[in-house]
Amino acid sequence: MTFDLHELVNHATGQARSLHQKYMNPVFANVLELIGFAHEYTRGQGCYLTTLDGRKIFDALSGYGVFGMGRNHPTVRHAIAQALEMDLPNLVQMDCFSLSGLLAEKLIALAPGKLEHVFFTNSGTESVEGAIKFARAATGRPTILYSKGAFHGLSTGSLALNGDESFREGFGELLPGCRRVIFDELEQVEQELKTQTVAAVILEPIRGKGVFYPNNASVYPTIQRLCRENETLFIVDEIQSGLGRTGKWWACEHWNLEPDILIAAKALSGGLIPVGAILYTDDIYKKVFSRLDRCVVHSTTFGQNALAMVAGLASLHVLTEERLIERSARQGKRLLEGFQQLQNRHEFIHEVRGKGLMVGMEFGPPKSLRLKPAWALLHAAEHGLFAQAVVMQLYDRHHILTQVAGHHQEVVKLLPPFIITDEEVDRLITAFDAVLDECRKFPGPVWSVGKQLTVAAAKQRFSRKE
Ligand SMILES: Cc1ncc(COP(=O)(O)O)c(C=O)c1O
Image (cartoon, rainbow, N blue to C red; front, top):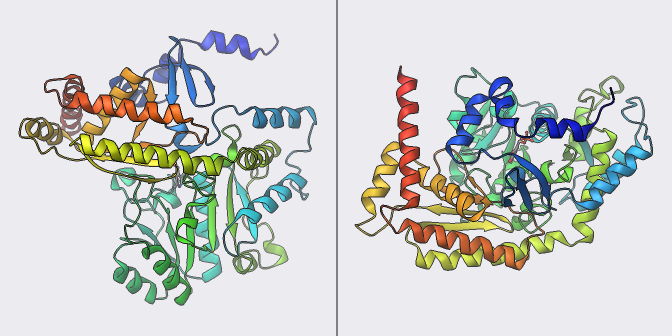
């Protein structure tokens, strides 16, 4: 029997949910059902996903920030097809592969500061793991400082740098020596660094969970200076914020930062072949790969696989040729300004913030006496249900896919592809406007969705106690 992908896809169509229920993660499948996201998708192109029942969904989630250039970009697809036709020598291991050398050269040319070497990985979290090892080996120190609310991945090392207890719960003791700080509280950071036991500070320039960054523009440069003064390495995690997401190649450029280690992944894949990269200084390189017998002291089988390198090269080409970084800045400004105007009209909008096309809208309690009890009722059940209800309405009524920006957060996050047009930006703004208009009605559709979530949250708490 021949292998026919078309036939397999046809066969599986309509069965995705039951397959996941049976063989994968039924709890997740149930959550999707609860929030009205239980649709099967048949196609993804540019900014759009098509569902089995023919809906065209605008994707403002972008696979958690993967699809900067949209889905199935023709240039990346073509490059991968070409690579397959060429029978490229893949994963020889005992060689220096030309395409990984080329991709490294291009990344270094784009990098801020004095980064000179690249190590390729298969994912974001794996890049964070590598950065932790490099920092420890280069400094001989154990401690890594990370931020409250940080997210750097979910393998055990990166989980030790996770600022949200709910991710860590149940997984036992993680990597020792990792300490959480509040970056805005510079005195606390300075005290930690002065102990001269800290290998590195790691930060997301814009925190993915909640789209947060310091109000005070001097916080990050000060932390970088304190790191230098105390011989601590400064690691910037650009896995989500990098490669144009915030309107610059790297979000750290907004603060003129020059990290010792910069990590990237997500958009480098072109959305087709997973790839991550650790960019680091020559000084760190010499301390990690310090002798002949340590030349592969850190390595991974699939790190430089040919298709990933091709995807990376093609992605950098598209981002540059189509001027997508500039476009992200321009369209992000339009979106943010539109949201700021909505803030004048809707009392639930507490704040809108972001850079480029990494944008968050945070909700807060209404001022009007009529709506206060509805808000209080929702929050008695769980923080974050209002934002979830907004996300559900955006999807159901306006066919726009977004996400709540983290556990128990009243923040909706948008990460649309950089190819988004003016009309599509305006469509997002109009949809938020319409959903928030509906919130003024009590009872109304948003509140009944909220009630449904409240009941589910209460049931969940009850069953946890049993
Ligand atoms: C800032 C940041 N770091 C690390 C990661 C982990 O990346 P991955 O999911 O590829 O392991 C993510 C993923 O969302 C991220 O946003």
